[in-house]
Image 1: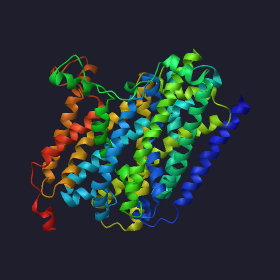
Image 2: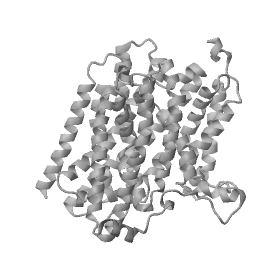
Image 3: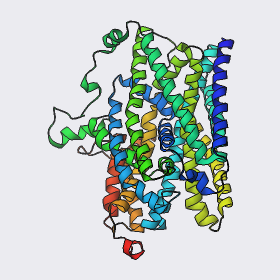
Amino acid sequence: MNAKLAIDCLVLLLYFFIVIAIGLRMGRKERDLEDFALGGRQIPWWAVLASLIAAETSAGTFFGTPGEGFTQRNYTYLQLAFGTIIARILVSFIFIKPYYDYKVFSIYEYLTRRFGVATKNAASAVFLFTRLLASGARLYVAAIALALAYEMIRGVRPTQAETLWIYVGATIAIVILTAIYTTLGGIKAVIWTDLIQASIMIGSALAALCLLYFAIPGGWHEIVQRRGPFHLSDLITTGLDPEKQGWQKIAGMFAIEYTIFAGLIGSTFMTMSTHGTDQDMVQRMLTAVDIRRSRRSLILSGLADIPIAFTFLSIGVLLWVYYQAHPDPTLPKTPNETFCHFILYQMPIGLRGLLLAGIFATAMGSLSTALNALATSFTRDWYVTYIRPAANGEESLRAVRWATVGFSILMIGVASTTSYLVIVYPNVRIIPIVLGIYGYTYGSVLGIFLAGMLTKSRGHDYGNLIAMVAGFVVVCLISGLPNAIARIFGAKLYDQPNWLPVMEFPWWICFGSIVTFFVAISFRTGREHLPHCR
């Protein structure tokens, strides 16, 4: 067993060495904040495409999506991918050109030009807070592999305290390794390492899918016999209740996570917010040479989402069939751990190391982009604006590197807290948590950006703050958040009206942005920010 583990560890260590070496080499000769944040706008579009894929595919996706397939045993989650393609087309033709035209480093600088400083500060603060929570919340997932490896080596499942220490220790190690090349190499290091990480992630997932299929005795016939025949309803669901009429027939649709309407409408708004108003995603698009290449990488990344999501869902479905055919009393109770359990116990030597490298690749890929974006936004929107307005290129570069270190420390704190909560509540599903965090705040930000880009004279600096608060309050109400918090303390704040269902996360950004948009455009833009007055 020790010799076998040594081979897997060697593969893993080789991966870490290659990624860090490439990251440091590609990030040489940085002179100022523009080099750190945008790589001189000289990154090839295909590298930007790979970076977008790596940023989207976190360790949460690596385990969470197979967990959805294992739990649901269908492909209804894939419906959300349909809206991501629509959203990318909209983002590429509505958002990207203004960012290039204004030559922004932080996309929230656009809001200063369009509305004023207050709107920019609010949107930037929301991004910093939300991105820190969302990226930190999913960071612990890569440590699942180490906790299960501990069980495999010792033959005993670790206690809750031991599991927590494993999670925290792994989180610290991942953050430190990622922070090294992100801090020194900037966006160039992020994108070129993302290219390696995306390749490893996709290759290892395909290898796992093939191995799973051939490990099931009887192949396709066995899969259909145990799981049942596949129908269109395993992919497309409407959520409409045929036994009800009028609004009640439609209302139930909002209370279901994965429907075709959530995919075509809710997911479109979600992706517009993450790919149009999130510094994490947009920053890498702005490293492309020009608008045309940036659009190409963005749209193609949307088309890649469908086969990638299909692959990970198929892994989950096949895992369910495999463990029906091969019952395993040691199978983890948490669906998020099932895929990792299979990797550790069923994968051949060497390939198991590659799969573990794929897990860490997804974690490091999404973490590096988040750290770079957080540091860039903080430096450009806050440090250079308020702390050191006269900072030169060298001072700004030093500040953004220290900001990367600071956010790395904060990320460890968030990930450690999440680890504790997941250990205490083992049935928690990753995907709804991560996407839900975005849902509460990103609708407000998207609504403000849409008001700025779809109108010329609507939206006011301080009216936008009212609009953002209104959007947030609406999301809290439709998600049932006040009562959810009250139930923790054994109380109930109000009775949800019968006509208003508690909506699932795919709809939160949609309604939050719509409310924010219409409240925002009820105010007129200040004269100093009208196009003809600039």
